[in-house]
Length: 211
Picture 1 (cartoon, rainbow, N blue to C red):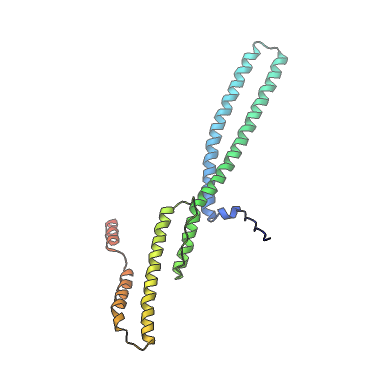
Picture 2 (picture 1 turned 90 degrees about the horizontal axis):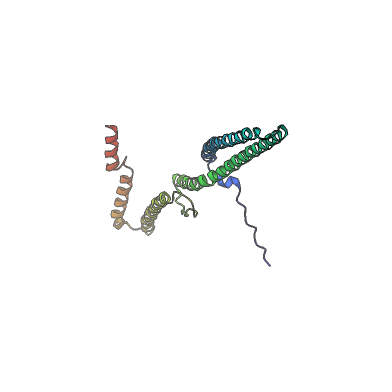
């Protein structure tokens, strides 16, 4: 009986594709949430202490010294518990925000990382097939446009290969491939047009920005 391969656990480093950006953004989220939690927690804690002081002041008028000391101890214990609860909540909330920040930024870093790898391939003249993003990843619309651009490049490369292959086959047969000249001239013109500085629209926008 064939054994089933164990499922590979997803480790933290798999979520940190761009550590510098992801950790910086996550640290900013944790800092802002910590400031907000500290401010609200301090206000809540001080209000509870004021309430304890009111209870103590009211009790001093009716209770004896021993009862007042007991009440003071109880109120102090409650204040201590509230402080511990506040600190525990702040730590737990900070960890939750940190985890959420890493997971959320991963949904952006993943597509950017994938696009970067494909750009490196294009620079090295490798038009490998592009696979879709994972479910839940962000930048889906941008990635679809990038994928369409990449598909257009592959289509042009395939058309160029077809034209060159026909030319090679004709030369190998010892023929003068005059029938291929129109397509080759068209291909040469397309390549020349693609190497212009910019489109007319881009040049017009650039001139307006300068002026």
